[in-house]
Image 1: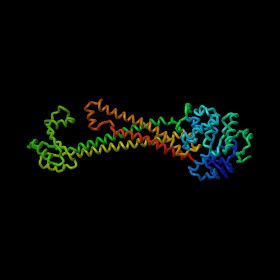
Image 2 (image 1 turned 135 degrees about the vertical axis):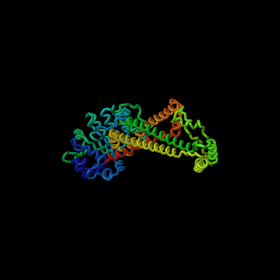
Image 3 (image 1 turned 180 degrees about the vertical axis):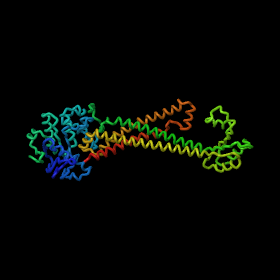
Image 4 (image 1 turned 90 degrees about the vertical axis):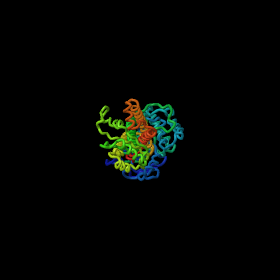
Length: 219
Length: 310
């Protein structure tokens, strides 16, 4: 599904933030992405989200060389990827329902086609009674569940999560992680960036480790 | 600050992705309202001058004036009869009218005032010649005949006046159109600045839309819809104000000004009321300004998105 070959990236003329990344991610797998703050986890996720291009090396995703993609093809690939951010990034002027429905709305689907699915998903993540309120009235855990629902509503093949439990309490972290595991069991490929060591101990998923010296794959 | 308003029911149709209350929205709406008002008044003034000039020119073109100077030894009454006969024998002439001495003196009142004794002056007598066919009338031949047969007679076709009038009206029209073009250019620049400001302050929305797979075309369309709505609101406000202005101006000339002044204004400039064509023009200005706002924002958003896209 994803192949990185000798990938490096630098911003402008600065030093390389990522260097010599070579790895492959197969469909249906679950990978943790770990590393100290500033090691480049978010940058790697942005490469996987196609919102950045590498300055060297090649990336193949879904069988396509991403360096030669035009905007239209890049957009089509991006729609096969879901993303969850640590800081949620919900749009404050929209309701929970509208935030979660956003990926379907931008694809041009009419509300009648997706309303039932969005409501069902919101029920599934425990936000059935919160769908008409704005994010400002949601708790941290509710916001993150809404963000996860938004990321998966369009049934992405690859789900990226950037420290999704960083802003919630430990108990909720566990529940959210189980939500990701459940999504993975349903067939979604997941790359989850985290520095929570208890997760890494509890779940025996392979780890993409970014360090200041380089990159390694464990497990 | 976050919008904490609770909506009892989610929107039934596609919900608006760009916030209805943009940071720059209200300012831009008032700016567009002012620009629409100025555009409407400018175009209204241009149309008024242009139509008045055409009217004047046509009116003057349907008349020529025979002027007969008093000469020693000549009988004015005889000369007048001869001139009238020559004029009425000319093809394309509908009628003639000899102005009395009193009417001739009355024409000089604006310069000399009333009560001035003009009897000491040798005032020429005038014959107004109305033309039924200004293009077909042989005015040149009439002028030659008058010169040969009536001592002291000359023919005034008002050509010099018409030329100056058309030249002045043309200058006003061109100046008005230039002002209109400048207003449109200023509107476009204001919309560009406002759009860029809106995009910068709503960068989070743009980024999120990108991350969830929205195309640049979709994002530009969403922002364009919002700006088109702002343009329409501002346009209607400005157009409405212009309409009120025209009616107020019409009311003032018709009711508030002294009758003599109002009549003069009416004679020179016609009615201030816009009429059916004027109303169509006003609606057209509103639509053009609104459309221009939407289009400008779309182009600006596209450029912004292309700049930030990978």
